[in-house]
Picture 1 (cartoon, helix red, strand yellow):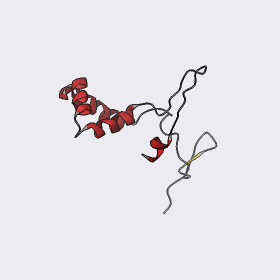
Picture 2: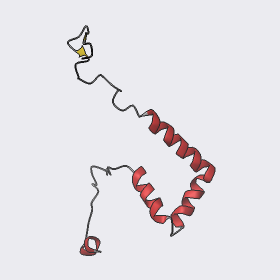
Picture 3: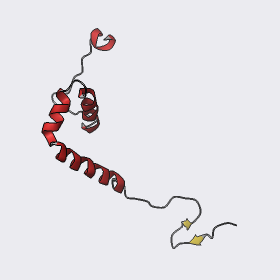
Length: 96
């Protein structure tokens, strides 16, 4: 038994397998917004900035802190067009 196909005023047919309009571009997922708010609240209750500084200085948790930093910093680094950002690597940077 197939589902009924309904004609709309436009050239699209509801139920023909094409996706609907969905959420507008850039609108965050409700669950993501709620989880971020819970994390902010937990951080505030744990001590906020002072708590994060403790985690950054503690050798047991420093790598986790740096992982967090990598997730919240922008992925694109832009400099002044008149003074572009330069990245210089030498052999010890590449080979350890």
